[in-house]
Image 1 (cartoon, rainbow, N blue to C red):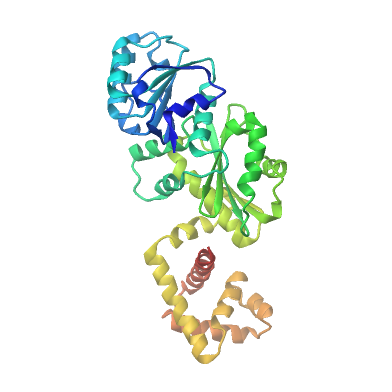
Image 2 (cartoon, rainbow, N blue to C red):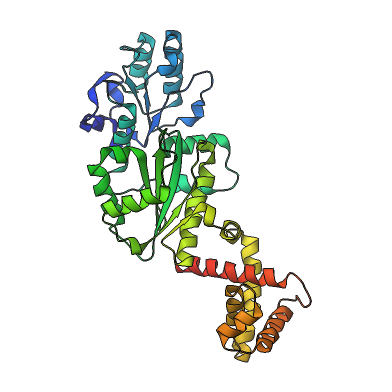
Amino acid sequence: MIRIRELYRLKNIRNLRLIAGEAGLERTLTAAVLFEYDPSRMQLPDFYRGDLVVTTLAYARGEEQLVAPSLLALMDQGIAALLVKTAYFAQLPQSVIAAADRLGTPIFLFDDTYIEEVILELTDLIRGKRRFAGFDKEIDALLSPGLDSARQRELLAHIDPVGAPAYRIYALLPRERMPGLDEKLYTLLSEDAPLARRLICMEWRRMLLIVCHVAEGQQKEDGAQLVESLLARAGIERSALCVGMSSLYAERGDYPIVLREAIYAARAASLEGRPLMAADELGMYAFLFPMSENPFVVEQCRRCMARILDYDAQNRTNLFYTAQVYVEQHMEIAAAAKALYQHPNTVRYRLGKIQKLMGMEDDATFAPMISLIISLSRILGEEGKE
């Protein structure tokens, strides 16, 4: 738990000074949030109790009358504290000072330091620098269906308060438990400040997600080369990881899509035994992974599998394995027969049995259907190991 008075521990923020709200120094902080909106368009519900709001007040440059109403509205919203860079205003209106003292909302001024560095240092202080934790609930929420735009903005204000002209997300999935992964990346980022400013690292379930900010002029860089260089510099054993790489995006509203691209690509790379997979290589997996998250589809798949596996158990046959090989051989009977060391007619007979068990005799959609069931069973099998 971080209290506001601990902001004095921040060594890289120049001339940090408290000008109001001293009574609130024992408040706790949950997130550092950037506030640089035009107040006529700002969404105050995006700011919550526990938020430390950082601003340059750039939106009020040349329009000083905007300062007091916007900051008073923020404090009335219940934010924990306010940090103002003196780039445009060396002092704040007396009405703001009086309200901060009355509400116990600490207001700090600071000079010169880049606001991105302030956000990064505050985030490190709040989350702790030894692990890339703290955003599981936010990521789960971003991936949940029916997420409205206001809630999405709120989540992104916590995860990625600074933003960038473009961004890409990488998902690192260890093949086995890899406890030193976050420590190795932390060591690298603590020694390379420019790189640290570009990356947001977050532990989520079995993965480590890395949001990479891409500046103007860097949008043509090779994402695969970047991640390979990052892992090599961190001293991470490359063969121990499967990496999924999203496409390059500019719109922050696409965050849920970008997250899914990276996560699905990492899972597909694991299933295919590949070290790295890009989102544009997902192929059928782009449809299979969302289907595997649908309870109705999963239940139908398991019922079909159960019919085949029950028949195998009762009759000492291997219909399910035959189906697996048939799908692996792209539904070509001759290739499946060769892989199984069986006559093609034997494979046809077994497939006919499977069609009957599935109630799909003389159904032209049997081949794509059995391909779907076998592919989904692989995904569900991998999920069961987690």
